[in-house]
Amino acid sequence: MEFSAIPASTDSYALGEGPVWDAARSRLLWVDILANTVHEGFLDDEGVRAGRSWTFEDTVGAVAVAGDGSLLVAERHTLTAVALDGTRSTVARVLPEGRDSRLNDGAVDPAGRFLVGSLAQDDRRGEEVLVRLDDAGVTVLDADLDLSNGLAWSPSGELFYSVDTLPGVVHVRDYDVATGAVGQRRDLLTIADGHPDGLCVDADGNLWIAVWGGARVECRSPAGALLAVVTVPAPNTSSVAFAGDVLVITTAARGMPRERRAAFPDAGRLFTASVGARGLPTPLWVPPACAR
Image 1 (cartoon, rainbow, N blue to C red):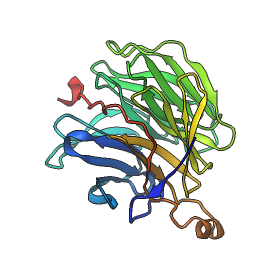
Image 2 (cartoon, rainbow, N blue to C red):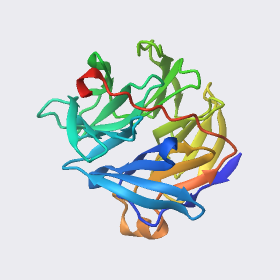
Image 3 (spheres, rainbow, N blue to C red):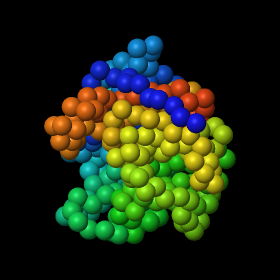
Image 4 (spheres, rainbow, N blue to C red):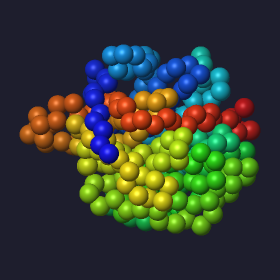
């Protein structure tokens, strides 16, 4: 089965990433990592209408929303809470000073904990982390990744999916929602034509995986079988999220040669697609004791 995505934003983003649907406020949140900015938008018949934005001093890899509408932002090394009045406070430091890495994709688990991973900004391989933030502080789940990326859970919350982009692997493991404990990591599938980036899970338990360098989103069954493809007129498809029954896709314009950019004038824009599926409710971030 094949679907086509259509442009949904007027603006183009250097490295659009991490879309999050905040159903309680009918808004979409996403980041432009290289512009150090969190964006807000609203879906209508014309696409995504831009709202507010929040700019930071360094890169922002991910954003999550709390029950009251406040935000948690993964800055380069730290997690920062943004209150409704705009006040910012550091929740936790994840990466140490002097480490040439930055925080990348993150997501909230079904119980409200925030998980986030890192990527190297030099040539190191196999040293990046995936961590969990909760009342116990920051716990390292993985410390051997090449480039930690998309995170998602099955509808029951009993399976946890995570991406390691450079080797092209989507991992799966058992997940205990009550405690946040994870089981042994297993390879679910490998993507060879392009690199898996962000992903989400629909209400039927199928995975929707953005393929960087592949100009597409793949729908995979929980067993890894290819079910459908969404073609996107932008080569660097970075992440996905459902806003109800609308699939929202972020893309990137960075690093494209002039000739390539001319061939894909919509690169970096947001896209939407109708794919006959519906997303799961977005879990809301529950601030840990250190942030209350």
